[in-house]
Amino acid sequence: MVQRYKVFFNDCLLSVSSPDHAICGACREIIYKLDRRALGEVINQFEESGIQTYCVCHENPEALFNLLTSFYQIIEAAGGIVRHQSTGKYLFIKRFGKWDLPKGKVEKGESPRMAALREVGEECGLSGHQIKMELPSTYHTYKLEGNRILKRTWWFAMDYYGDLLTKPQTEEGISEATWLVPSQFDMVLENTYRSIAELIGEVSWETGEVE
Image 1 (cartoon, rainbow, N blue to C red):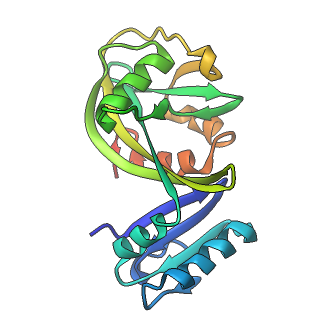
Image 2: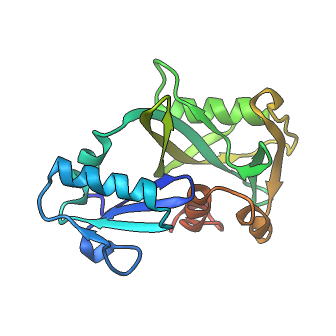
């Protein structure tokens, strides 16, 4: 059973976990019964409060998270953390002025793995990159025409052995596709989304795998 889910609303984090795995040390809300109305009130509070980290706990976090997703329309995306094997550098993009990782929407008929490989190739002009392993998914919410949207982004660690030349997909708002060493990540963390910062914090940059 997954012990914790992280859902982002802008840069605010809603953590769904068991009480023993609450990331903020203590649960803000402990839900003893899977009650849709009570959870709806929690979601409203989270969206309106602006609290940076809001922890919701239940003895079965997977069941609680599944109930939470019923409030949203689900959209899936996929992307990659790409490691250049001979240099140990990692691929980042700058999209609309903020640092990000290459990713995009899963198209009809695609698997998340296929979509991740395609999006990295299209957004950065790469070919020959290969998936090494699956990483934790990230979730973020937003409202579109009054509807609640929950976007799940599947992430994959990828290996790449080619040259360092990139071609940013400018029509997607990408101005840079750049290889960085881990010592340069502070620059990224100063100007990125919290979901990306959290993902960066979960990866061992010596190997590109989850710690």
